[in-house]
Image (cartoon, rainbow over all chains, first blue to last red; front, side, top):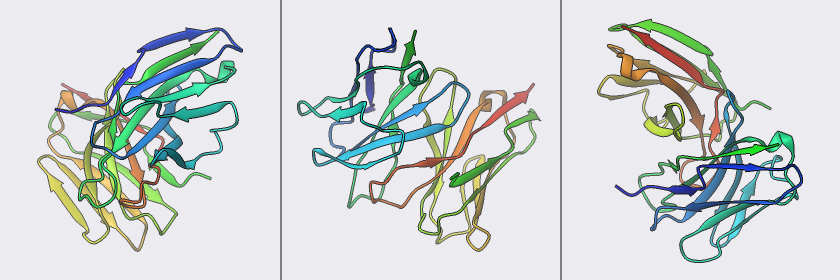
Length: 116
Length: 113
């Protein structure tokens, strides 16, 4: 069964450092997303990406965040200068996109980011 | 602004009982309402979803009830099992638009043997 894969599973970084979280969405999906979940809290939308550009972003997704699809398979989230409050589980997700009956979002296993 | 409100925050049900989780939404543009199940250390996984053209959808032991006029929907888990113990999130979205899922705060369900 196709799945969304994320690497690394756990990343520890020092405050102020840059991190890149990586995702491989399901191959025929067209929309890609990043969500985050602070421990014990709800899943929060960060950004959606379609046709090589951001289609929507939340107020959480400020200038320190960026996304990129550097090749045909990877989808990355970069945090330029990490802060303690960026510590969370980051989930990548993908959906088939327009014209399909199934709009199910498939989530990866997540990357636990710990900023120290 | 919390677009999707979910209750209760936690729920304990005996094996064989019925688990009921409720959600309410504000944005009338939402027209797709999925429920996600999340086990510890895993990503959310779609459990069941409904669109507002029907008032109920059933898949096995899981049923969504939808009340469009009240802008509420609920998840019923019949014959709850210990393996159902997980966190459940309701969500709302504008269907097939590529828009973001708006999640509720989650309900931690514990089914006791």
